[in-house]
Amino acid sequence: MKHILLAFFCLLSSFMWAQQSDYQKACAKYKTVQTVTAKCQRVRHKKVVAKDEVLQGSFSMSRPDKVNITMDGGKEALDMNGTQFTMTMKGKPHKTSSKTNVQFKTFQAVWESILAGGTDLSKTSDLEMKKEDGDILITITPKADAKTAKRMMFTSFLLVIDGKNGEIKSLRMNERGDNYTLYTFSDYQWK
Image (tube, rainbow, N blue to C red; front, side):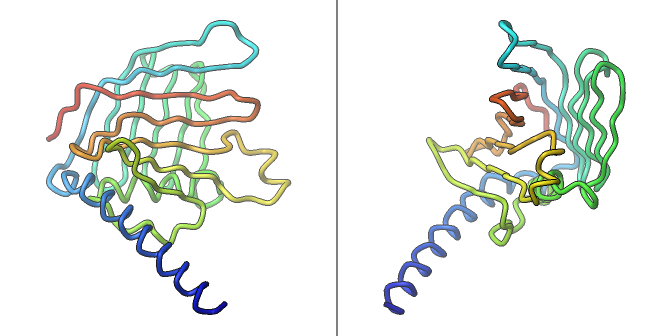
């Protein structure tokens, strides 16, 4: 039985290493640039509302740890500056930190890893990485106790990276009750 478990663990470890290797290749381009910008479309889906809300905006990332998504002239935004997060909704900023808010701890680690060219994420416990149709899919499901989980705005995040050119295709932020916010990115500029 020990041999079977050891073989299974070795197989799982080699599979995770292969996924990590694909991820590092996809993100290698970020090592050579300081800033990345793109166009962005945000779709906010609420199950009880017949029509999704769609906004156009911009997306930018700067090394080592800045990510910004801005819509509607700044009335809607998601800003990561190191451990500090600001989510602006209808012009009102809501601030938090990945040091105190578990739902953003791994979220921050993934963005910083991308900006550093794909640093190792294989030991991150609330993250799943897989390759599908040439893309790298990173799913973050924050782990929290029941009390904390009830207060969390997001239940999971799905980040899709193009495996060939490293462009982040989309970010889906899932909420309770089949509600979500989906950001899709296009027209990248690398500086």
